[in-house]
Image (cartoon, rainbow, N blue to C red; front, side, top):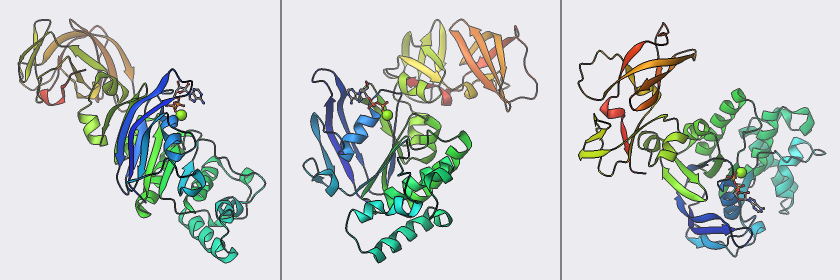
Length: 346
Ligand SMILES: Nc1ncnc2c1ncn2[C@@H]1O[C@H](COP(=O)(O)OP(=O)(O)O)[C@@H](O)[C@H]1O
Ligand SMILES: [Mg+2]
């Protein structure tokens, strides 16, 4: 395990177009940090530069305060797990996992001990003599994880390792990865485009947009205090209110309606609220943060209903847990509690 510092990373593949623009962040010892962002925003490029698989156009990578830019890849003790498992089809599970150690000229006895230990930890002991084609997708991904872990890497990099698994297995495997990471106290950088996945397992989340860092914080802080409309949309905020005037530090006006927020409205351009935090026909006796509307469509989500509500400020998406569905054309009043209404400055 180690501490990782990324400083002022810039990358251009063609000498003109910058796909990474000034990426800087730190991952502390024993932390699991996820890089989250849509396809093409530069996640894989960032990870590959840090792992040493491609070079940066500008910038520095420090591991435990030492610049590793000039250290050849084979001398860096890093582990990598990819989306494709990249197992050797003609080798057993044991030999796939042992491969990296054999390259290091370690004695046969030590190899067997180290491989057995990792197979035990990753729950693969019973499958040691099988070939990859005799394994399920989840088991194959576990082998590729075991192969990365067997060298006791200083840093572990994972690039969308769960994307080829079905939804249920993905949830199980992400829990296993988190447990292992904590048990072995590893520093891990994990790339994903799945918001739920990375919020579930990360100490911190780095959200990228077009080659830049949009926000880097704990999942809780990002969830409750998104730094921009881009981040808010990415993590499930669906309602945005344009701010026309800032009246005081906690009050804004939008089309003659007043909204109070718990957070400071200093510099607010928009307000945002999640669908599940809006109340329909609330019994709270609030005289503020109310908007009249009419339901224009509804959707059954199993545990709840989702409504589109037309108002003078545009359409709102509201999710409500309730036994019976409200009908379309119903006149409703929306209540936006001040503690759930977040001001955004960009
Ligand atoms: N080898 C390459 N040569 C040229 N452009 C590339 C190469 N790899 C990635 N890119 C471009 O760099 C940008 C970032 O790609 P990538 O890091 O793979 O994004 P992500 O992993 O977030 O989907 C994209 O516009 C992509 O087309
Ligand atoms: Mg990628």
